[in-house]
Figure (cartoon, rainbow, N blue to C red):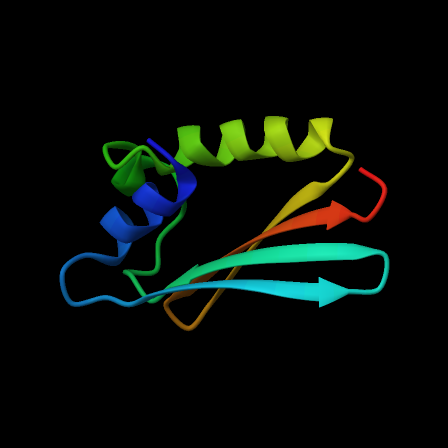
Length: 87
């Protein structure tokens, strides 16, 4: 399952998913954000494939010289894929 697909599953039928591309000095950031239930990305999300999708994203983004950032606040989860310009 892809990170976007896992995020959509996490948000559920009544949730919302935001996908954005942000240009920044020295590279770019892809943001995938949802307002699904606040939870640790482990037990409850495991059946939705999210932890696996995050690990795959970390591996692929890391190969390009980037990083993955995960932030949780107020029921929202924001995953940022940060890529360097020269990656």
